[in-house]
Image 1 (cartoon, one colour):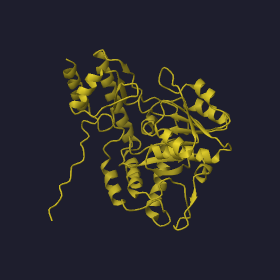
Image 2: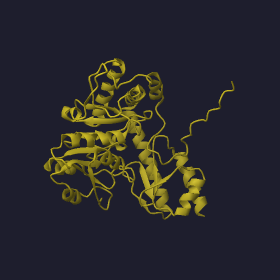
Image 3: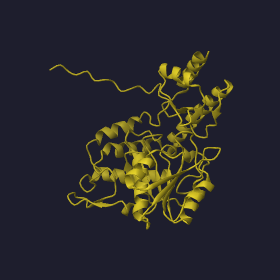
Image 4: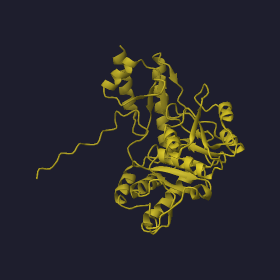
Length: 355
């Protein structure tokens, strides 16, 4: 029988819009080794279950949480849904709602639809952060969850997490932080975002983004056992009698890959990666500004700039994988695979298509 020719994976050298990146070599190797193990049944697959406990402990260290609870999820979408689900299940109201800034990830729309909750989105301020007055006006006795973002997907901004937490808890709601992208760079900044900075209840933090783990490897962290208990369902035919995860059967690749990446890179490797990519973002922002292109100041390694639709389309035609914000700006994420040479080539093409 003739062997089928299989396509090669897409190269990352011209990918400037993704929040995922090339996995660390050790993470890749470990992911392959544990591909068939199922951490969804920890009593049967004890080795990968122990790796998951170690991975959660390390995620907790990164996120400022001693005695961390949680699991390795498929990504930020699952973690955000789980935070909403736990809050709904613990709420005393029959009509629970979620309050989140308009900058929040679209996974919250999915969460609200799946869980039958109302999603109340509120404006952001002039610097693209959650407007505290708008949040305070939106919460009420039926609010089960307030969400803040630590590293927004469009502008790389960090919401005022301590202040949002105070609003949430004053209303009797839970506080969830979506640090899916920002969680692996924010420890090296002065931002207040973590469990150590505020009494937040849960967090989404993804090793498969800046953590350089293979996809899929997200993280769901909880401060207290009651949050996980609110998610637990009976699993009578498994050796494990209950399960708090959403997806059930999971590949051990995510667990093993995440742990290997974090052990290899935390903290020094991540610190170096953040510094390199922040420098790249600053370089790109300067390049745009010197060309008269309006640019949003990159507080984290993400650059948004106003380009005409024709220029954007020409850059796409030149092979650059770029995206737009909801308002139409060019959006570039300086992930670990994005080199200075690639950005210089991009700027060169920008000059060519604008000439």
